[in-house]
Length: 200
Image 1 (cartoon, one colour):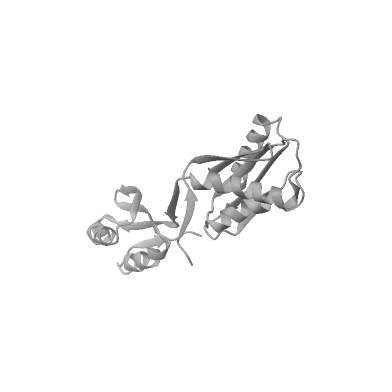
Image 2: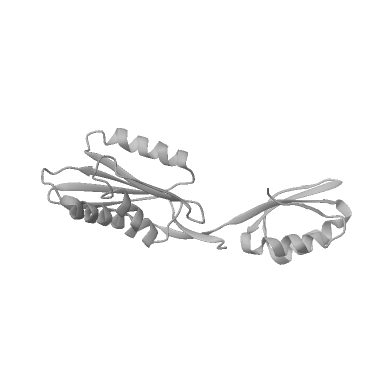
């Protein structure tokens, strides 16, 4: 199981022209289908005078949620080539919207596929692509006398400390890369009296 993935940071834009038709491409980092719907809705309103607003997205670190939408273009000529560029670059949590202004000359099936592919590629080419890790968050409960032992493990394995509460009963909320999580939780559980609550 991979515990890292590629996505774009922020937003980027690209443009491609073919036989007077203009293809404006916009790439975004997204985290959910709801966010996708919101952005697509915004661009459909903003570019209400365009002939088509097509898009594709991939979500999840396993890249197992995706969709390609032709929005009135012949089936498979818009969304599919956009999705193809996302897949070619191994991107996830990424949405690409392409706005087409018709130039009066029909491009044909292969011409459309190529235009949407090139416009998507332009937006990706200028995007800030970064690798992100899949992190696991869990909570550690212990009594104050165990503080030194617990913090020794935390210092050695260096998870992110998201929250801490050191009263009589102590709590640490930790985040660590998925591939390193089991080692950390096993080390903490070796300390008698420590309770580790892992995610569902």
